[in-house]
Amino acid sequence: EAQVTQNPRYLITVTGKKLTVTCSQNMNHEYMSWYRQDPGLGLRQIYYSMNVEVTDKGDVPEGYKVSRKEKRNFPLILESPSPNQTSLYFCASSLIGQVQNEQFFGPGTRLTVL
Amino acid sequence: SQELEQSPQSLIVQEGKNLTINCTSSKTLYGLYWYKQKYGEGLIFLMMLQKGGEEKSHEKITAKLDEKKQQSSLHITASQPSHAGIYLCGADPYNQGGKLIFGQGTELSVKP
Image (tube, rainbow over the protein chains, first blue to last red):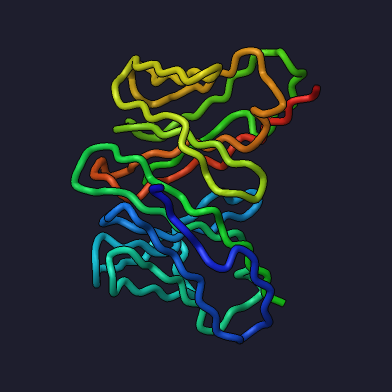
């Protein structure tokens, strides 16, 4: 089954404790992206990657890091989480180089930073 | 930069009623995506529209893209409780695949 998986689905942590949210897709998609969703602000892109070893900042990259060492994986790293990073996070993937490709979303990771 | 505005922001309808959600873009749309999100869950792809005047339907949901390609509407006929959730419109700002920008979403509640 074609899918994007994220782990963990729920995470409660404390300020300053490094964490990683994993994202994996099995569709051989070049493009992967992380979004955060907050009430009243909608979905905002954090980082994206056009292919292996190619990453770039989205609209709200501060406080986050990413890496793309393999095509299927795109982890999101919070080196020193702060309460303002409490949010619902989504990973997504799609093909590129073609017009109008559906973007597939993971189930989401709800992060709470105390 | 391109922005998408959805209206209404929230909607409560009686089961069986029809409803329409609008998505307006600040720039010409190269393509428009509609997603549905159940509360706190992932996004489910509904439909994608590319051409001006295009209309697509899936079960009781119909989406249209206007001729000028700056506005899309999502119409639900005979709403059911299963239609409840958040509807998001998205657009590819660079027309090359990849990044999507989204409207803020429309929260739909359907009363039995």
